[in-house]
Image 1 (cartoon, rainbow, N blue to C red):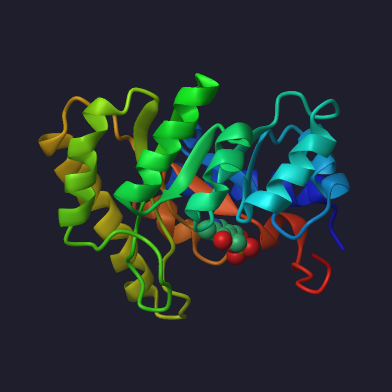
Image 2 (cartoon, protein in one colour):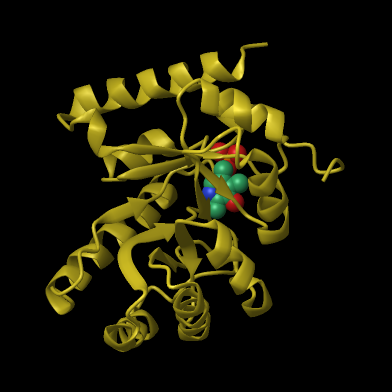
Length: 236
Ligand SMILES: *Cc1c(COP(=O)(O)O)cnc(C)c1O
């Protein structure tokens, strides 16, 4: 079995190859290593191979890991990518540099509240619900999302900087591609409706579909299995 380091360099070379093919700069695609259900020693292995950004779904799991890795991996950046319950927001704000799974005004207000008490600014991505087999995210008509963004001017600790989605889990490439296109188009719309924000990031693409995502304009791919191997759901 390939090591984490080998997997990382394989993914990096794949990103490079796709970018070369379609004429994008490979620096325009960031790699987030999704370490949920994997151990801190595996995360440290990735960190030592040069991977600084990690994505976690569950706040409590992330919180414990971050505490363990604080001195070993001082430059580690944590993104929360899983659905966030309001009672978990305080801990999420404490450990994360970015929350990618904002899917309601209520959660955003809660993030602002806790950031204010920590005097911390935080990057947020808004999640869009593009797939029938997932539950989370703003509706793709964009109405709720736009209403939420209208409130952002009073939230001084929130830095809106991107959109995130999970494409449908299917073999149908055109369904996957369409989900990514919805995200791309929403970014265009937000650029014209909210020029005061720099909503530039498109976080889309996972182990199975990151190649398609990059073709459709992803600026960040979130990859777990292809870096760390299968997750053991009995372990954590
Ligand atoms: C688990 C997860 C990933 C990574 O999925 P893989 O298929 O293991 O690459 C990416 N994004 C989100 C939101 C996830 O929950």
